[in-house]
Amino acid sequence: MSKHSSRASDRRLGDVCVLSDDMSLSLCVCVCVFIQLMCCSSLELCPDVTVTHWSSERARAGGQTDRQTERQAALLCVKEVQSARIESESGSMLSSGVRPPAFSTAVRSLQRRSGGGVRDFQEIPHTGSNGWINLLRFWKDGRFSLLHKHMENTFRRLGPIYRESLGSQSSVNIMLPMDIGELFRSEGLHPRRMTLQPWATHRETRRHSKGVFLKNGTEWRSDRLLLNKEVMVASAVRRFLPLLDDVARDFCHSLRQRVETEGDGERDQRSMTLDPSPDLFRFALEASCHVLYGERIGLFSSSPSEEAERFIWAVERMLATTPPLLYLPPRLLLALRAPLWTQHATAWDHIFSHGASLSHTHTHSHTLILTHTHTHTHSYSHIHKLTHTAVPLQFALFELARNPDVQERVRAQVLSSWEQASGDPQKALQGAPLLKGVVKETLRLYPVGITVQRYPVRDIVLQNYRVPAGTLVQVCLYPLGRSPEVFECPERFEPSRWAASGEGFRSLAFGFGSRQCVGRRIAENEMQLLLLHILRNFRLTVSSTEELNTKYTLILLPESPPRITFTTRSL
Image (cartoon, rainbow, N blue to C red):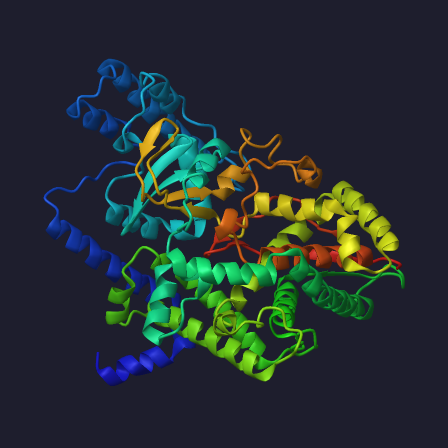
């Protein structure tokens, strides 16, 4: 291909088809696998379940486990996996994923018979030792979009801990609170998580600052301490709550006018069924910009600007192209001028450009985040993170609509609190703790990000296996939130379950400790305030109460956005 045609191909971002993405990804994976084949003397094409592989390794290392017992357990495990696959193919396993993992009795048998001593890292159950072969399987089976279900199914087969290698990345995955607590106790003064290398590479090639999200070490800590003062402390919450409340009120006023004008039914009970996701995204973007820059950008008008729509598109493309890029060398993709990388980089370019134009256009003495010079340079690269509240709001409205008893309980508390608060948003939220429960319960079932990662600074023991310092360990939130070993009746949407004090590493949607989401307070209050005003204005119903199928595109999304009926209430 000529240089001219290559440049022309890069410019035609909107015309690049999905097939081009797949072909590009396939080529890059094959190149990486070829390199591995040339560098390795042997290549283990092991199946998903590797109990027999653990046995041979332990025998060579002089392990004391009885060989006959271990072989019997291995055979039992293989039979269970075959049975599980038959059940899955016959449809007896819920495709919705609500059914939580039931750990393999073979794995438990192996753990019970280990003699009580701490077992070696290499003995941790794994999904196949060669990351490039695993990556090819992921790509072939389309598992990137179902990574959360893959994790749940793997825990079901292998037990509460397993190792996985994908491309150049390897990790230990866990899901039980006792192990999560041990991991966080070993995170050190400067907690590290997996670097999103595609994001970091884009910033390096464009000479942008990485910002606090992508930094580590002392540089991260100094920036984070400054940001904590701006967005995490109580005084900051008091400053931004009125800004969020203004946007939430305007959103509900705009939606109510639309339902009353275009809906059906009697005057005081007009109804309209719609997909709220585009409106919720505009709400999240409007609220984020109001907090960041102190001024409104007018996304609730009947015809949002072309620039706003372009920004929404850019965020969606950036999220969709990130997961496949996580396990491939970004520099290789850059050298190959892969369409997948071109789309990813172009989407980021527009996100930075959009944020920069906003920060130059809107200046205000009461802006919350742009009060320090260093945060001004980072803020527009993180706008997209503050818009992620739109997704859990979709799920929250759906769960409230299909659980009318829960909806009425929350509404009763909201109305009582609102009356006593006399319009003060902070007092109204304090008097309606079920709203916080709705947010937590939604994020339990539908976590925005499906993992929390750490690199322990010392050797630790998880599920009686030694995990060396510096190993990437991932807390898998989707299986955690749906496990009966952690939650009673995990399939039920029950906000009141969070009324008891102490969460014991069960609610981690915003991360943990000093590395938790810096926008947590903004996001929590933004969601609670919008739900408060929606419940005051509308009754919510849904035609189908079936589970929502979900997909993973760096964040968890519904495969098809739920259509919800909004019926006006008398105020």
